[in-house]
Image 1 (spheres, rainbow, N blue to C red):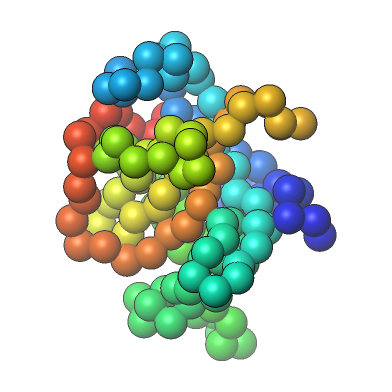
Image 2: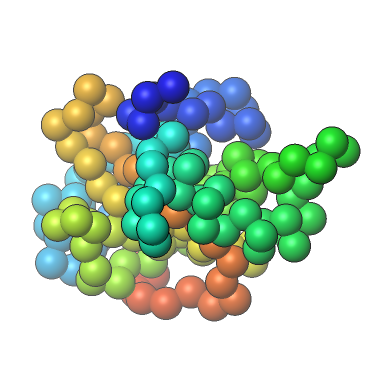
Length: 148
């Protein structure tokens, strides 16, 4: 599986983990009328850098297991963890940070936080990519909306 292949959402068996609709984001006016799907890619992980499934697995598997995301065979349920955060109704926060030079949002609920990066001009068109997901007690940044 290539690093840019879509990974299906275990909650609904679609490629989308939700949508981000019309937002008002400070210093990012080009996104105000951009509705786009949220996707998870296999990605890569090297050192402490990367994105997608492999990065989440390699950096955060221990904390995901500690939350109980383990199946009967002892495997960590990383996709289920990501889907429990990146889902309709989850609040979105803008921090003013970029990844790399793209708008970045945080999706936060009581399960954890996911970092989303805006992508355009790809074979999947405009979309938000799940960069990473991890445990975090409180959100930060300015609340700008919710996942649709």
